[in-house]
Image (cartoon, one colour):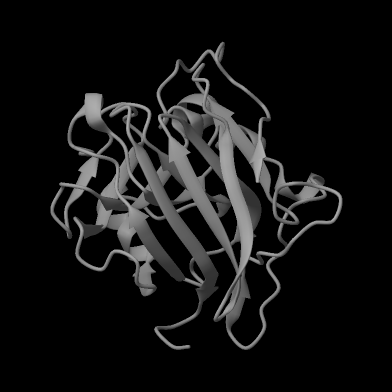
Length: 246
């Protein structure tokens, strides 16, 4: 489905994709007052970030689409069936966009984030280590609002990069409060569903040298605007858990 919503060309944060995360944090700062907030409902030690079709909205139910920059390309996504329920299918053509959902989760209780993803096409020459090539086919962001939101929020991005080595952790070349964890790299595994699990609580402490505040939102992103190329990926089965299992 191609949609065009919430263009943010004139944002005070500038045109960079990672600056968008500041906006996401602002939008998620008051989750208890927003109808789309995902209440932290624990079922068997798990809090699921549901993906399901919304009959009245293009984005998945409870999620919001954001698109940035002045490119002609439109946000292109579909909600499709996957072995574990519904999946978000993302396609980018020289543009950048995200789907995000407000959540309220205490990582001391549910420190692990779990998800399944499948990268189909990587942006040509994408490399998170360089500002000019900071494009990835698959990005899962966890946003931690901190006052003042626009300047002090913290963001962890779990990404599938084209060139940066898997296992790398680094600061965004565009936004100082965004830290990346390169979970996968390169063409190995393209077209195959993979299950990932990260201890966000420990990642946050390692990356920011402090205890994490409550999570404010979760976002899936795709971009190929810097490299002027294209990318494609899927996300499904996103949830927080108390331990490594389930």
